[in-house]
Image (cartoon, rainbow, N blue to C red; front, side, top):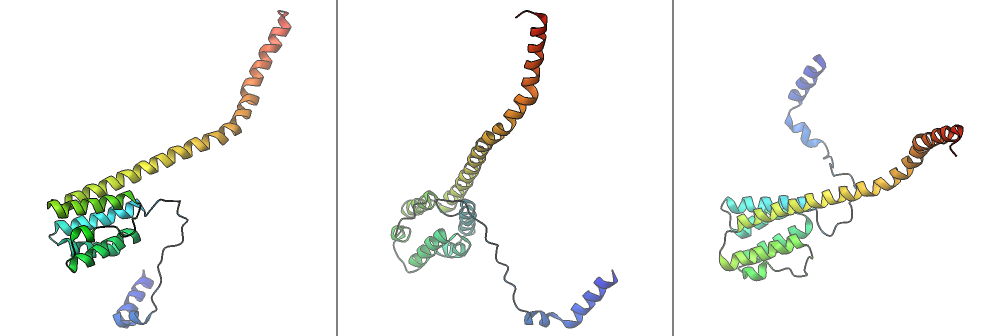
Length: 190
């Protein structure tokens, strides 16, 4: 307890200016092997879409809302939001701003592009559609995770069966059959 009090007193005496002299620590995430995916992380896309919808609900215009949510988004979605925000800020047609220059191939990004173009043409509220898209993206990610878990359980069942089946036969079935065969042979039925 006294050591903690001494450290606290030393930190107060040194003051907040001393912490600025320390080098910054790089707290990057460790490299984790990512499974093969067809596009960006669906949960990251969903959270970026939630931020975009929250910005729209707060009263921001589409261009600043897209610019504010782009840094939080995965690279493909972030680039798309940044491009659209810049083009909309310059006064471009919303259909042009929300078009994919090279086609991303990700169905969630394509759905966002369709939704924003439709909203620009019809004047429909964009925030509700973006929220629904984020919910669908999360549901798709949950379904994909469930399917992967079910595939893993099926793939695990084969090797486990190969390991336990011989033991079951040797320790469960063979002694019963041998005991019955011995009783039948001793009785003289055969």
